[in-house]
Image (cartoon, rainbow, N blue to C red; front, top):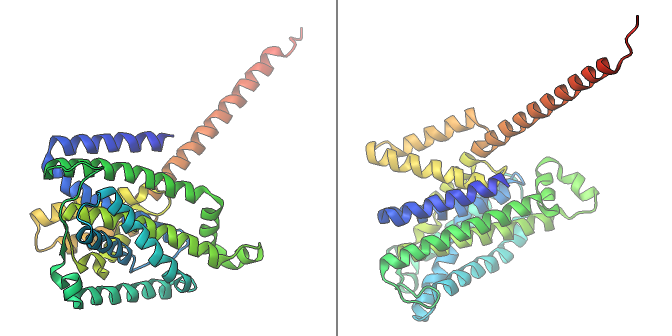
Length: 337
């Protein structure tokens, strides 16, 4: 319950910041798309599998939005987002059928190889995709209302915040469900899962689909925010940034993706502003420090501290109860002359 309250308070504060300082809307929305994508990557991280190519689902969703916006000029932004997510889901259904058979580095590199194939195709098919120049998206209506740019960006900020809360709740609910617990068990002992009568392949496939759908939301929102879709959305560097955020925040809780995104964007913006030639070095140094100091990420460290505090409180309660029991026993004992 505390996490829910804190999440809502953080969303309200972010909304207030965006409406007060309009120039912050763009970095906030882009940062949230990174957090949503990292949230999807963290689903597979629960099973001990890191994908270095999940940006391809963000790219598939973004290009779906661009193609539909060009083919159907009157399409609404909500419909475009839904279409992009469905396209990511359909691609994941096919790709996941053989990708989830692999584990470890093979899983990560196979996703990377597929994303690089998509990246190359988008760059080569210039007449269809615009090549490296990309495809521009004419600003669509939002819930049937045609808005000016500022109003559209504010509406998109509200929509992104709502989607962030809903997706975080959905993923966290999945983590606590039987399927989510089974997905985590694959990381520790996949053979035992099979002996218990569960299909590790099917569990991985369902988790992979959820991961792709969540990442698909980030691509669709990013396309609408930028008004431009390029192959860079699906590059291996973008996938690496998603993994960076996942490791930074930790995969122990859905909130880790958003904490990691805050840390990533803060370091990136500050270092790019004051150390433009060293911002990549500072990002790498930050990740190294986090791995050494907080191996489970920001959220893992917070969860450990909360667990320790809970144990201390329980021990204090037991000690007080024992002390009160001794005092009560001494009070009720008969007095001998």
